Length: 254
Image (cartoon, helix red, strand yellow):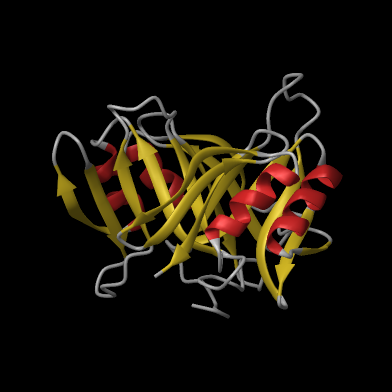
């Protein structure tokens, strides 16, 4: 998907919550060639644009955020009807932490936690406020849940109507992919992190042309490495933190 209208139950937005939006713009603009326009899809912050396509957003952290809280990335999913979706969340054992059914008269937004407490966002909208660039250089191309509770597979299958398919089920590596029924096209994965010290979270992979060049640039811009670029089944992957300690992952596809 390069230019796309994102269907319900697909990832539709990735957003950095930042204590210093201008600093974040400088870091990611220099790293990925992003340009920025205002506002973001929820009426604040900025949209990141690459080659005319909207690929991400950056928003300021709320005033009540704890002092010193690092920046962090969030993943949002499009839903057809917010109230119905939140009812599914409640039935499935999740929780709506915040919901605004009509925040600007034409769209709804909610922050939700799955039964294990991992947060993600949802958006209901009928316009073009979602991502318009996916699976291209400088844009998200894969969406992944890191969780210590594999039982959440059932929750996500129920609330999003996903088909969840195991890829590996060993003690060393448990991984599944998710796709909408009948499509046969995985849009992301679910990784069991029970054996590693990674906090549960949703993240996206940013597609790049040269993961090693990105790695070198990260340190020049004040970030650092969490995992040096390495070869994987699907390409060369690196994991980093930005200049405000937000973790992110890039992939150079095969």
